Image 1: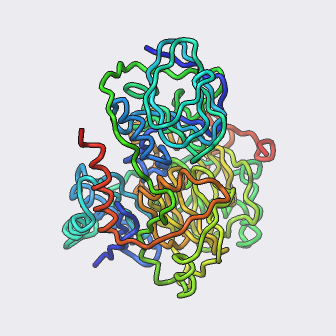
Image 2: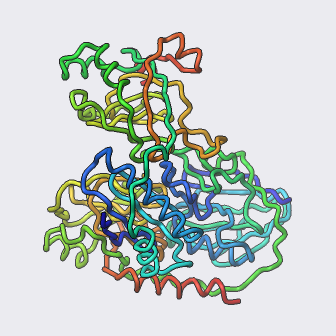
Image 3: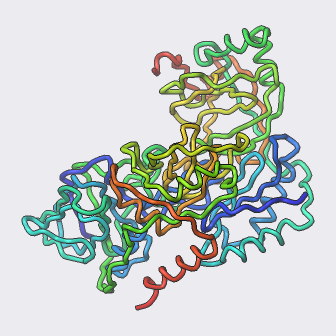
Length: 304
Length: 234
């Protein structure tokens, strides 16, 4: 067993895995790592299952001290990480000797870093997952949805040793976000459809794990009011003010706003690394094409 | 019955069975749920029912969108409504009182009915659970007697007590845990609506039916209810 003492944390530092499934019909949200590609990569570097429990560190402010010899891996954003006084870049596994500190200072590139340990960090599976959803009091190290906090501990029991090398998955951060257009697309005005896919959208500071708001030309929905229905991950819903909201892992399970469509999983991983104030563009993609791109992308995690 | 299938995400298709909310939708929804669960088997990640739709979330590593569409069409061919009795029937005790259900007054004024009659009408009907959402175990039920239909509060409360029973338009629901909320509150149930230790977790499942039973304060307390007045929680 190897232990890390948490010396500093924020409400945005959470234990995550791929999320909670098979319970959406009970009103339980999905949860899970927002940048699932970086979570998978951090786990891959240690030979873990791609969805083994990791720490999602958003923006920084997180410090741990090793109480034992620890093997760890880091992927995702460059949050100015240091081992004691030595800078460490993401995309690699590394060792923390007993007494050494790993700290994340501030975002230099991207927004979310993922810290993995051999076999994943220990946490009880609650409704099949340890994904932390604070609002629902589910998951996390204690099982009751608490964010990681100063004075707490991260523990892992795996031995590692099956470390693998994988070149950085290229998320092409500047590329537009791919939107699988939904059935209500024809109910938006022609001008709105043009604006949606031909103008830049600024990321609002009103953003959390439930959703990110996009600011730009207001989109006009002209269809009838809708009856609440299931909301998929990445749905772009358009409330009456016309400013779209991308719904993320901690979204409510059903809702009644019209939708442009839904982002692809790869685009969601890209979006998870963007900061408020930055701009994104949207591009329409057909479901079948997106599916094939996704399958092709995943091959990198299966070839040895 | 010819359900429409719509694209919603890379790994989700929406099965649209109806265009309006009705209690008569339920036998069809239940039948479709069963058929889809067995048709997809392990390739089904989640099946999210709502009033008129079922969202099928499938494992995109197991089936592609065209295969998923074909699976849905096959599963729903010659769909027949399921005879009632598929879901469980729950009786939820409710302490209807102004201290925990302040909108009893509003509902009485709007409907022109005495508070006792408002309570009698709310507890007289056997409601259907159309969908769960908003929070784990939060069941959207209906349809409430038309004279009791009341729009949501203009300003939602920051804290609604666990167990609070409310009305919004022609729907009724009980809050599983303390949360913000904009429904018109009329009482409180001691029932534990969501329990991670329980088999199935949520007391109510889509397709179940629910009847509310008025109980006195003493009975409410005996059943484990918390009678802290709403204003004390604010």
